[in-house]
Amino acid sequence: MQMTSLTDQELERYARHIVLPEIGGPGQQKLKRARVLIIGAGGLGAPVLGYLAAAGVGTLGIVDDDAVSLSNLQRQVIHGTDTVGMAKTGSAKAAIARINPHVTVEEHNFRLTADNAPALVARYDVVVDGSDNFETRYAVADACAAEKRPLVHAAVGRFDGSVTVLIPFETGTDGRPNPSYRDLFPEAPPPGLVPSCAVAGVLGALTGVIGTLQAMEAIKLIAGIGEPLVGRLLLYDALAARFDTIRYKKN
Image 1: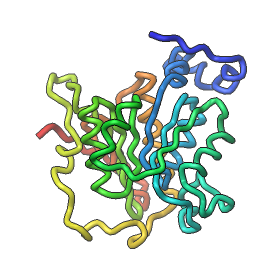
Image 2 (image 1 turned 135 degrees about the vertical axis):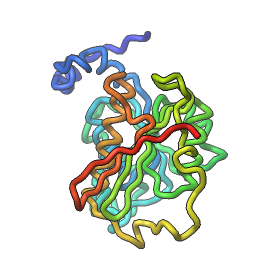
Image 3 (image 1 turned 90 degrees about the vertical axis):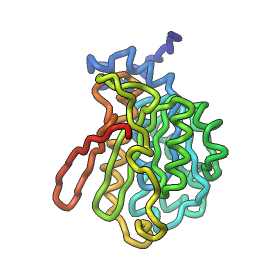
């Protein structure tokens, strides 16, 4: 395995990681070598990008074709009032540079589709989906399955959120193939059944909770620690302050 040395400045920056036996120097080097693709620089993408940058992930790819608007700032904390009107990829890149200058950012200022997703996904080690529509979610999940890339998926609405990890190209401890996104959601709901955040609203801090959980799962996958949420859908009810877990299998 290729070694990625850490500078004295990086050793100081990541000191609280390195003293963790589960991470240490080797784990931090894995983070530095890692290439992570984040779909969306919005409510979920904002905390994902911030925490992965702070953790020292070497390369972050950002896919988003939108510009920062004033109504984004209630939850999309990687952007600021001074970047309203700016492309979200560029705004996020500037914020990441302030968080950690050791991180390389690759901007993909376009909308992800079933046609362009496979080639893009293949360039990264792990994918984190922070998109807000089923068309993109299916495109990302299908591309990750085809290109054999782990996917950290999440969704939010009003006061509820969910997180899971998809690695359908591998088998579980029981020898059965891991489930895919289409095992969890065989087909998209009818148009209009699931209202957008613009219509239904969403509590800003909720996206921080769920996005941070996504960042945690991505770090676990990269460092090879813990038990990722494979075959488990973690549900969070913010109003009740309750977490529940639903297990699901390959159909």
